[in-house]
Length: 316
Image 1 (cartoon, rainbow, N blue to C red):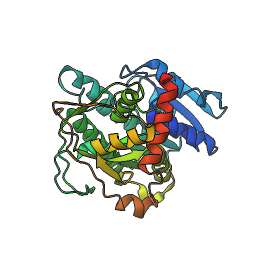
Image 2 (image 1 turned 180 degrees about the vertical axis):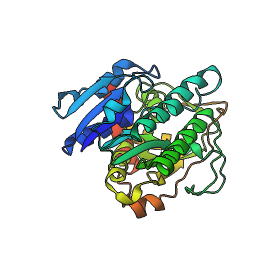
Image 3 (image 1 turned 90 degrees about the horizontal axis):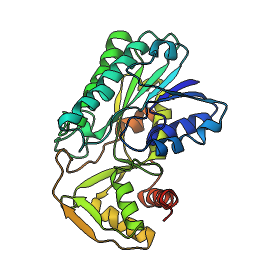
């Protein structure tokens, strides 16, 4: 297939593009190198890809580039690009989130509506759309009540995807990711921060009491879900949870990291962050039924891989 991966220099996008290339697909990757974190890290994510003759890279902003021309011959589109981060989505930074997560997505969907060869558009949504929904496990039928501006923008983009499916027949699938981790994880994400602190002998900062829980999902499982969503005809027009079945508290996850690393760290508790969900735990029955998706990587295995990456990245 001729594929487009937006946000290709990012955490999930680079892993996904590598899988597609390895499976024989032709991939065009786009990234704007927005300033969420170091361009150097993102360029390192692309190093292996750029050695493949089946991969092409285009630096550009989805809000400005000629998307109809880019999509004219694309069959699969994986929309991973966006401005991530719950805690930084408040205040004056919100305009960046609306630009990257809503307006850019609408522009991509508009081009997709007139793309003659498009077979599937897979949109990277987030468990942040659920927010205060109290009942666990979280199912796709629950009323979304986001508690952060970031969650609001991801829900708005998800609604746009479904509008373009209903009105223009854009063959879209929305995947709600639950706390993705693994090698190349963004520097602002918890396991990256915890692992770097642990390996460098620093204290680990935890927002709140540390008893909040997350359904952690290894990046390879996220990539597999994306490929299945592109391949599976029955997935069109569906919103589904993608999670790893590794729901534990942050403190228990830190204990597991310490066990793997063979080190101990002092945990310092900070005030609870605005916009953070207390608990996430996904019902993945829809993805199991439609995609045949089952997470393969358990938390200990995934944390070991991330810690090895952090040791190499920071020479620790």
